[in-house]
Length: 76
Image (cartoon, rainbow, N blue to C red; front, side, top):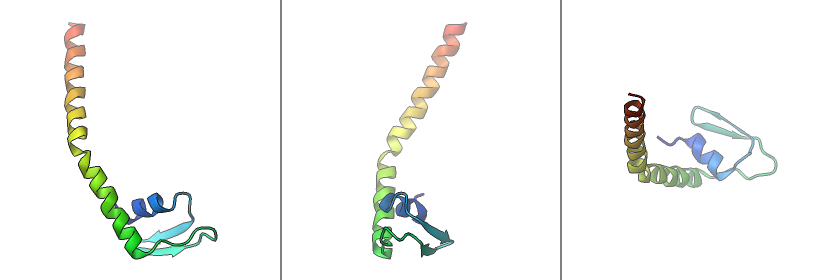
């Protein structure tokens, strides 16, 4: 699950801030603080991107298991 921290880091990489629970304290003098709407939209975008890769992650796990079986068979 994508969290608020992930969204902030995606929106403002290398920024300076503190996140206590759900309370954001912006300490970066260079970058502007993202709005709650920007953060919510980024959480949604990142979650959709993560969800879109669900099938690929599951297939990779299956293929890795097949490769393990092949290696074990080759050793015999």
